[in-house]
Length: 72
Image 1 (tube, rainbow, N blue to C red):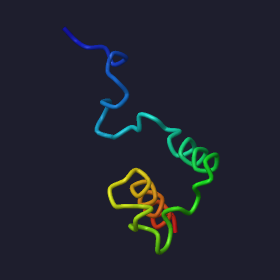
Image 2 (image 1 turned 60 degrees about the vertical axis):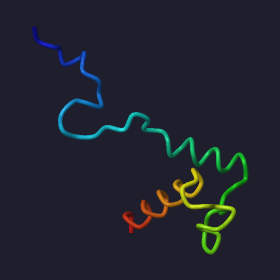
Image 3 (image 1 turned 45 degrees about the vertical axis):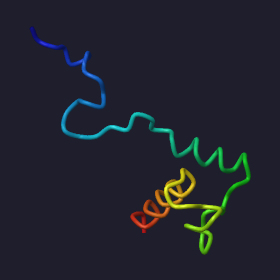
């Protein structure tokens, strides 16, 4: 019994990784803009009491930092 290719989820096709949610960054930046939390985890504040390591805020800031590093 063969499995049709359409029955295989997108994430499992081939050897490449496919993002489940391709609009995650737009949603994250819209949420930051809406709540007014832009710059909360930047500079000296990165890793401090307001942005502790391991928090969602910290991890998102780290992701943005790495993305900008790769871009330039």
